[in-house]
Image 1 (cartoon, rainbow, N blue to C red):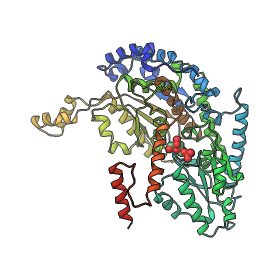
Image 2 (cartoon, rainbow, N blue to C red):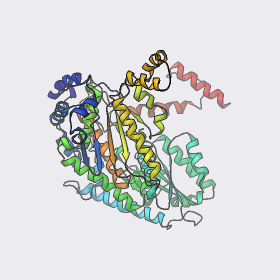
Image 3 (cartoon, rainbow, N blue to C red):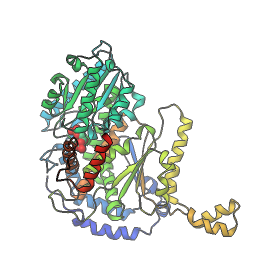
Image 4 (cartoon, rainbow, N blue to C red):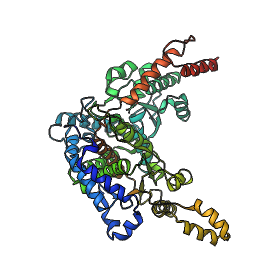
Length: 546
Ligand code: F6P
């Protein structure tokens, strides 16, 4: 793929700067009032998802310039190149073919890789059905009832999100997730479980990740200590990995290993065998519907013009807010308890992808890339960090995620959740003027002087830009589409910033230093090479062990 032009060198960027400066003093509420069609014309639909960006701080001229920016960055051609398997990851010389994992048929030229994907899907289906139908027994002859996925980062966050979001679709097997190297994570999980009826999925693309391997070893000890013979371990351990040798060394036979490929990034891998725990949790048909939702988003991404293309528009809004309106962060607010893990998942997806300081050609960038992403499920955040959204000094562009129905059958209570979501969105838009604050204080019985003193504290400037993504219900299909939407938005933003969103060299340094510190922990004598502050903490740890 041809290298990207730097964002600030794209011809439309200069025009966008001028438009952004002019819009800084514009009220979004006025735009909504003056542009009669705005509430509908600043909305788009794809794959069952509805994007409303009418409450973003932009007008028709800014939108047109952003669309021109996307054309100048050749986003449509870059999207097609991604989906066709071009080498988009230039530092590791690889394509990024997560879309192939959910493709209904082999795209031209990718038949060989698709055959491997189909074969793996058949094996996943077999495991999901065998387990849910009680046809797989442990060392004591009892059917497996619980599956524990041991993995971290992309080998944990996606499967954990999907299993948690789709509880209404769960089949017979209960799935659990262990990620942290803190032994408490594994210990707390195992407390509830019976070794005779538990199966572990050791999920690690590299099969070298410290957290996953140490948890997997501890799980193996737990199983052996409970009475399983080494020959029984195959009844209780599966591996998902590209590193079959390391899995075999651990003691997992080839029949129990499902493959990963180096053309899938960890944070984009939930569609592969990394998602096996979800396929087991929700059953194979629902997992196929999940893949189908993502495939529908892929088809839209590949074909829709920029002006209608949800991932491209969301990426343009990200760049607009970050590089032109000065926002350094982005908050995601799912109004659905099942989607509580969505911000965690999106943190890895967006920040591991786009937290980069050099362009794809290695030259230093002089503009910001990926903003800090954070958030939590509504309504909890309303009673904590929403204070900063409404009255803080920094702009925090937001995505509200709003399923319109609930699977709980408790429609009356769900109305309250929806009302809260709409209220927060409206409060961010309109805020409260000093006059309105004063009037409400007077209405509460305060005298003029006290009302005037307190009114400034009750003022909210409003005009906080945000989008609302709504859909009928959280289903396997809508969740697949939603995750794929954010994946493609992340890719497009990476292209606009001119970076490679598919490597993650930044996380590797921490792994290297952690193994070198681990190697010193048994040794009392200070050794050269560590800074004084780290050495002092190491000594404190040694003393605490005595
Ligand atoms: O530490 C970051 C990372 O490399 C992620 O990119 C990846 O998702 C995670 O570790 C887990 O890696 P693996 O699947 O190889 O264990």
